[in-house]
Image 1 (cartoon, rainbow, N blue to C red):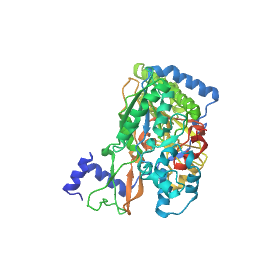
Image 2 (image 1 turned 90 degrees about the vertical axis):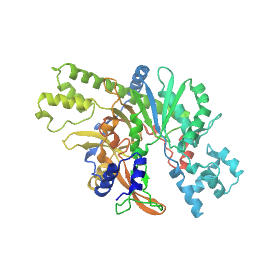
Image 3 (image 1 turned 180 degrees about the horizontal axis):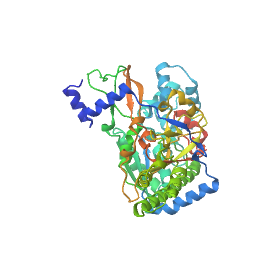
Image 4 (image 1 turned 60 degrees about the horizontal axis):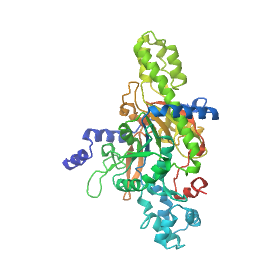
Length: 488
């Protein structure tokens, strides 16, 4: 199937021919559906905090964070193409739509309006403005979201990246007054990231009284997957070369695996608000972190007991696993000899931990929290996409009360202070196959298990309800005209 040129191309990507054969087999066989029993809801998988509990957990984090190395991890590799999809369609068709009408009616309210006028000379012509936004001019159509001006301020309009600098200083600074933020970037955009950070970092350091440590990584070529034709044969371009595609955000588990920190906050690049609306975000980020550190402390204590005291009672630990780690033990657990019960409890406790914010579902798209069933009958909390669920179980997702806003706090070290190898805690059975096109030709693409789906499937997971005010993503350019993105 593969010639010498193919083999050279595959190995230059950092992939083995055997791995490509595995991917082709996956295209032929597909992925199994995730076996779920029910959606997670408040009282059954999702924790709801009172106001006093939220404040208490926030204070707990503030008391403990000085002992921790903290990093804010922001996936920011993607271009903003979909954010401007309607604008490209307008340029292609010339047909006026409600989206373009809304854009033009609010053109002076965008944070980038002053820069835009440098290219349009203030022209009211829709085509002139749209062309300058996505093409020659601002060039936002091929820019990453991180570099797009999102919000107005009296002294300094901010990009999405700058809002993460501000937000990070509010909850992710360490005892040494350092705020460490890691962005995943595309190689072609990294110079622009570095130039922006070099220009604005002194401003934010002075504004928030912190020193920044900004680092970057890119999605590894070795995580790319081969594309295939609809008949599952390798897709080849006009020159006869194989086509490889980035395998989705799940590939970023390798980037996350290289972060050396005690506590890692994860949040998408486009989910930011102006400073006036950040207090809710900061409060709940701190509360999630306080809950995580407390949960981790208990896990560590039980692991030390299990390791050092052979007479430790397992009953208390079993209750902790069931009620606080939200894991149902296997059906056969009660019949196991004591030493195997002990070994299983150690295995369940000694894992990476994540506490995930969950928002009430008000019609926004996004993965949902569910109870998944493992082959041994045990159950665990997972974040699932509808594509992972069998048709006869779609109703379970449909009646779910919450969705995943990508609001995670993670602990990736064990009770001995050693980093977990996060690649050992993924579920490779939870990827999916999507339909795409290349230069008008249909193809199938292979997506790795999502970063907060299958890539974290074997982590210890806790879901906590957070308010909708903490979720304000910018999916389309006109989202920037919503009140929460206007600094008025």
